[in-house]
Image (cartoon, rainbow, N blue to C red; front, side, top):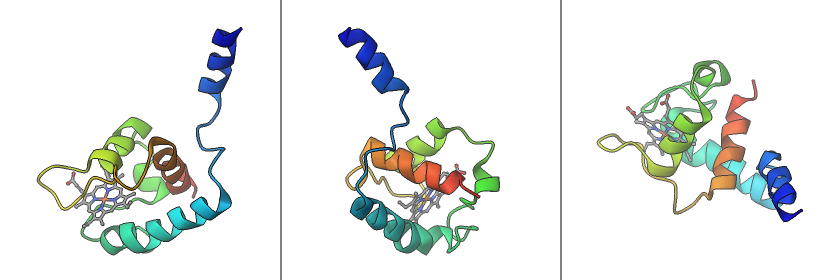
Amino acid sequence: MPYLLLLLLASQPVVADLSSARQAELLNMLKHDCGSCHGLPPKGGLGPSLMADAIADKTDALLFDAIQNGRAGTAMPAWRPFLNAEETHWMIQRLRQP
Ligand code: HEC
């Protein structure tokens, strides 16, 4: 039974539990922090476009890694100190919305 529960939990979208206050903070961060390099809307600037069509062929894993760990040797910083896994997935889903 606990195993079944774990399976169920694992198959749920990880983005469901963020409070609306935290979601607002993340949106604000996307605009101001990410936007300062990726543009607003994020059509690209110092960093590449993060528009839905531009990232359509990139996997969640690739985007997740870029956001959490940054890209060494580029201006892209690691956001791990500020975004947990759930929040990072939420942002990715948000970016994927047209
Ligand atoms: C100081 C500038 C800067 C800021 C701030 C910044 N980025 Fe970036 N980002 C970059 C650059 C430059 C790259 C390209 C790195 C490379 O050449 O691989 C990048 C790459 C990425 C990529 C990989 C895109 C791809 O096509 O491979 C993602 C995803 C991303 N950034 C998301 C974010 C998010 C989300 C935020 C805000 C939480 C953010 N970035 C904030 C500069 C920035």
